[in-house]
Image (spheres, rainbow, N blue to C red):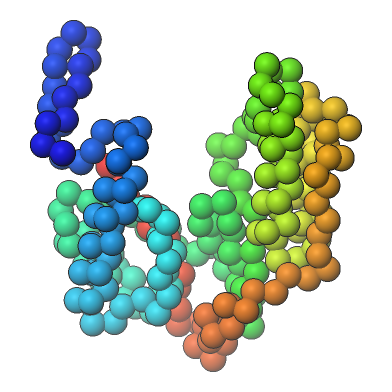
Length: 214
């Protein structure tokens, strides 16, 4: 941790803060750092978020609308070397990692697969020299993602259609697209969403996600 050296164009440099990108230990250190930061920030804020979930340095939380800016400042003061940005919900929708969470007017939450605007639809090409089991894994993982993340069967079917189109573009034949076929349930329920959004106060709550800015 104290002797992080690197070379660039013939010169030697020492990294004075953080860990090296790509190092196996970096994710562990990042999780430990974020855990300490969030414990400090949440325990010292007068009105902490009513819901908080974190994956490494990406956070999804629900907080009173009039406390959003104050809480963001509070987070950024916890450790000056780590600064957060926030993304507020737009048209009752908020993306988090590969999930888009949508809230209906009566406060019910549902989800579907989220694709970033920069997504190109490029996956492991079928003509590559990778083993066939890895190509089957691409098909199955994308189909499983649609089934796991889509609350409604219509969204699931639409996502599976996108998957098939994208994989055909990447050279996948029909026989492997039928392999590991995923079927969409008529309705997927998420028990944990009960109480997550109180319909009596949902107009006073904003959900937002934050991301670490290097």
